[in-house]
Amino acid sequence: MAVRILHYSDLENVYDSPEQAGRLAGLLADRGDAIAAGSGDNTAPGVLSLVTESRQALDLYDAVDPDVATFGNHDFDYGADTTAEIVAESPQTWVSANVYRDGDRVAGVDPWTIVERDGVRVGFLGVLDDATPALNPMASDLTVTDPVSATREAERELRDAGADYVVALSHLGRGDEELAAATDVDAVLGGHIASERIERIDGTLLTRPGSGGEVVLEVDLEAGDVTRRVVADAPVHGGVEAGLRERMDNTGLNDVVGHVEDPLERTESTLFRGESRIGNFVADAYRWAAEADVGLQNSGGVRDGPELAGDVTVADLVSVVPFEEPVSVAELTGEELLDVFRGARGGSLGFAEPDWWHAHVSGAHLAWDEASSELAAARVAGEHVDPEATYTLATTDYLFYSDDEFPALDEEHRVARLDVQHEVLASYARQRGIDPELEGRVRLHADD
Image (cartoon, rainbow, N blue to C red; front, side):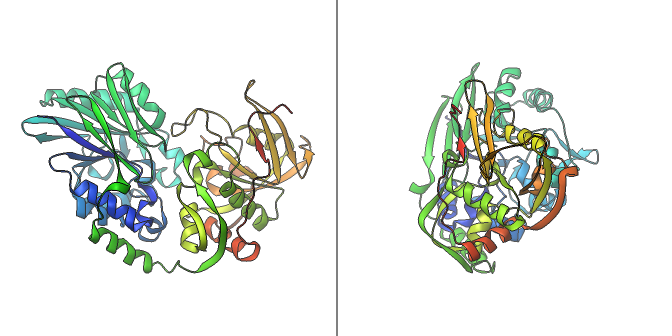
């Protein structure tokens, strides 16, 4: 008999679109004997997540009754104690082989479990990116060990326990390749990166459904086949849709702050491929609020989702940057600012594709030379950056803590903290409107 797994991951702000979440629930609830497995970031971030501290995900879990799940970095957005409460209240079995807190496995979960279907025993283990304590300040008290070593140990125990297949639920992003090459698991069901993936490495199946609950991947372990299940084609689970609409109505975030005539797209291709209108809007708002020389938003901090069109509410802006992070101001020399700009390109991040561009800017124009992989030119207020001058930079406070994004920014550079990001966006929208244009702020094939 075929053993089928419905793989979902990085649902993030799907709950802020009740119909889409209802269709996802409809697809997963009607799965028959398929195993429903989640590979992280399925509780946060998002508008409802921010308001409920991830408990909106319980609406989906209670309706669908998933089989197994592991953690992503955003599942710790409200601290490990809250994560443990979500684990205790949700019906699925959670697995995590490499995450600890105070010497114990986080949230009291086991490293692996076995799910049986028609006499076939499928072993699941979970691993998280070991950069998570640096990626998420709310996870700084976690210890995340080497995922490859943890997978080898859990795989050995699963084989000894009689597992016919061993499946790694991975939130490693690009680390999935190393995991597949260094272990003997049968499949790596991954997440952490917004783009989809279906391929094999050394005989190991690797899948990634992308973000936002748009696609679920149906994996046939025996045949090795993978089928894309488009969530928009599924029937709506009325209970989940109604429950999330009620939650949204109760947020108090439905005040209209602006109007968009030309819709602002929020897709992976928009956010990580250079200049974008949504990125310009965010960076402009930061620079305006701080009266800074430059505004900067890391591309991964703007979440993909439905386009902004027509009347725009506070909730819409929360969905763009759904974090309790303030906008902060840095003071930098010109040479330090150039180092910050250089951090906009690079493939070392586990959650990123190698060709992604990581910066949305305001007040600056950047030219990147792809041939030499160098910053060819950088101007602020129309002038080339003076290495000896002093500049102010408004950005998300997160970047002062992260070792993995824009490492040239440190806490010692911070000189002020402003309002939370979405509050800054709302104030800017009320006073300046929402009408960003593409202005050539970023050129990725520069000859300058």
